[in-house]
Image (cartoon, rainbow, N blue to C red):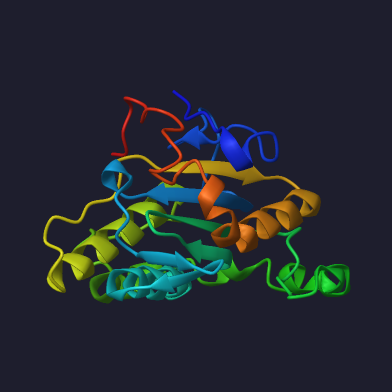
Length: 225
């Protein structure tokens, strides 16, 4: 089943699919625009103040754990990312070859387009790293003894953040069971995704994830395993 996008994201990146695109290999090199929401769209990560996101303790945990994903999963990179009051948007690069490093000035993208190519062998060179460190990395999430899929990465992120947020006092915290993703197929789309993520706090009053705006879609029945 698919989660339909309306509101600001509609028409820009297409409909984001829930969990997995049937037949698509999520371990292959690629870039993915991911959205993960809190259960019932509860606003638990802070608030938007004058067009910027002011994170609380839970929001800081989410931001910290997202930025640490490349340490948990050698061979992946994180790109543009934002924590919103009740959801996150982020880009995950899994050995992607066409993606240029993110810069404040989009005009620098082409000048740096070779960076990822120089490191395109990262996954293969480090394919044993997950196994060597699985005891330290995945004590509570289960061992990853193969190339991680996008689903593996999201599940680990949700498990670690949920545990830490509950430990700091929000014992009922939970993420929405599903997540939504869009496969980024070229640099033009990546640039638009980065702009959308950067502008998200300023668009909060119109954001379809904002409970004050209204429901965007019902969560699909098929859930994350």
